[in-house]
Length: 76
Image (cartoon, rainbow, N blue to C red; front, side, top):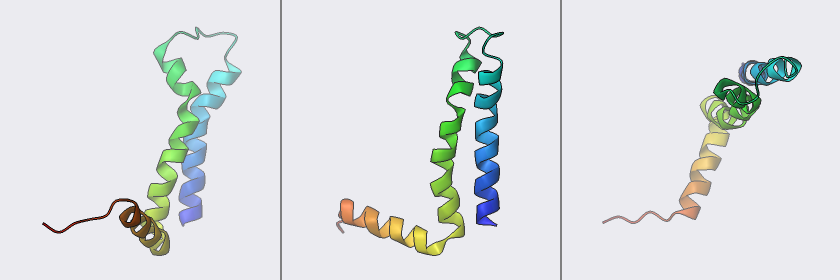
């Protein structure tokens, strides 16, 4: 299930970039939505760790352990 969700996320985040690239000759590059679409594939990099953390408890534990090593928590 995790692989399916990651794949769907990649496809959905890549489609705007793909279409803007194809239509590059016909559209205005200064439009805000075009600038966003050209960077939409980066959304996948942000969402993947969230998906992995939701579906994989070992990954979630590793991230939490790494975070605690970087920022020591102190009890007050």
